[in-house]
Amino acid sequence: MLKRYINRASPALAILAVSACAFLPTSGPSRNQVQTGAGAGIQIVDVNDGVARRLLESHASRLLSDALSGTPGNSDVVGAGDVLEVFIWEAPPATLFSLSTASSAPSVGTPSSVANPSVVPSNAATLPAQTIASDGTIYVPFAGNTLVTGKSLREIEAEITRKLRGRAHEPQVLVRLIANNTAYVTVVGDVNNSVRMPLTPRGEHLLDALAVAGGTKNPVEKMTLQVTRGDGVYSLPLETVIRDPRQNIPLRAGDVVTALFQPLSFTALGATGKSDEINFEARGISLAQALARAGGLIDNRSNAEGVFIFRFESKQTLGFSADVPATPDGRVPVIYRVDLKDPRSFFVAQSFPMENKDVLYIANAPGSELQKFLNLLLSTIYPIDRVITLSK
Image 1: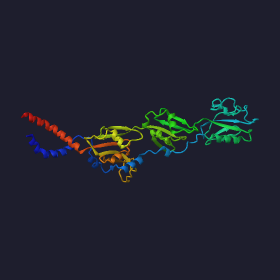
Image 2: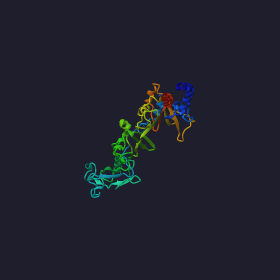
Image 3: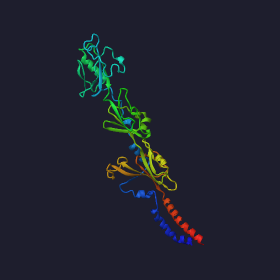
């Protein structure tokens, strides 16, 4: 009796199966629904080697060695606010700068605190330490106001010597920088100690500044270093700077080094082994790595032809025309489509770059919806069949 009922109902069941699939629970749209329901404002792009290469070129971080190449700035050049100390001595007989006319009290930083006090003869006249005035000058007796800003210590010595020549007896001048208040680099961000690092003639580099600041608060692979120089702002993952010595660029006065904690992530949804928000390193990961971290595709559910990456992309990235609808900030909603049934796509997946806030979606296979319906149907019919069998 049950078999006769099923045979008569088979056509109706087939129609019901097709229509019921639309009402069954699902993890998201099917492959066809994504493609047909995207809308006119959403661009669907098939991922191939050419697309992956263009994305790599447009999304790659500009190397610091290219953007900020060159030698270290001259930290020996002084500016307004720096503190200088001047030593002057004359060949005997001294006429202007004898010990009786110079300050007998030790000034700040000399001679006891000078790094190498033996350089300064005992009969040298030590002038009191002076802060360079806002007009860029210091005062030297018998030489008057002397412009020093923008000059190196050697140039300042030569200028003072020139002014004293003919007045002092064979004058010799030594100038020391006591306090460096202008040639420095500021280090801020997610570091253990925000500092202002003075630059020295040795030439400090990017990682020197990070070391002076006590290192970063977070793991290296999650940090990005940003260098602000003038009107330009440049950034690179810290891990890249460590791995490539060329990116450990020399710093210049006025640079601002910012350590940024950037926990990048993408969201995996659909027929994946793990639907979750998944973090990745600042240097970035490929689509192949993203699929692996998401647990891959579920064999009995996923559609290998329906792998999609949802992303907001700038118009310039893939050369979208000017009339393509965009968000107020000039970004275009794009769905990248990948067919993993094509063996070539696995090579492309190794170079396709994932971006922060991407959504990786794996569509269900068409057969999985039918399987859901059959399971539901059998779970309904089996108890009826069981009741009829027991009633006989």
